[in-house]
Amino acid sequence: MKTKDDITLVSPCGGYCGDCPAYKVKDDPSWGEVLTKKFNWNGVPCQGCRPLKGQCQFVEGICETYACISKRGHDFCFECAEFPCSKLNPAADKADVLPHNIKLFALCYIKQHGVDKWKEKTAEVKQRYFRGKMKIGKGPQIE
Image (cartoon, rainbow, N blue to C red):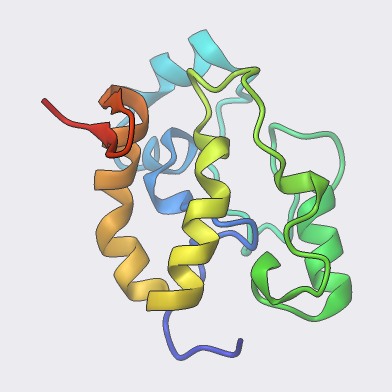
């Protein structure tokens, strides 16, 4: 999917680096406190997955998902014939602090509506993920 939309801060797996505390800390140092408490943060603001070519400070070496999608020549995981693969498998572990369980939703949304629409919606999706109350048949609701 070669897109005209700016994908610089949208990771191949569907994360939005522009909304990540490790990226936001460059403009708002108060995020450093959050990062230091919850993660092994090295004190350096992140530039985003794509500009760093998958060398996230929170993973050892290069992110395997980034390396995989780069090797295959895609912009996003949903372009791969093996999508969805185990790298995108949701997990309850760290779901309270990492929005990784919303990757499949993000990728499907980007595929259907495009990157720019996703960037407009990502704050709401993250709000529902972290603060929403699950209603069967309705999904997470903000009350």
